[in-house]
Image (tube, rainbow, N blue to C red):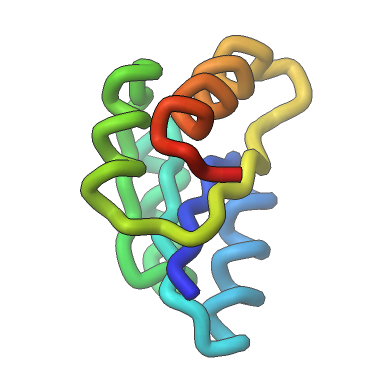
Amino acid sequence: MRILIFGGATEGRKLSAAFSEAGMDVTLSVATQYGKNIAANDAAQIFSDRLTEEDMADLLEQGSFDCVIDATHPYAVLATQNIKSACRTAGLK
């Protein structure tokens, strides 16, 4: 199973580590280089840029993901809206 996680430094890292340990192919998208640095061993691939809705949709289409998880901060309302919209565009849950 291929999973894409959008997350903060702590939540994204913990989820990535758990899914990786379970043998799943995990890609993590974090907004900062700091998040990328501390999650370096927890995901197969890590992106560290703030992505627009269009960037997210492109990533979903290119990555052939089975599942997307929004583990962003509760106050990251725009990020959550963009993730939902990109998932609808790509036909992913």
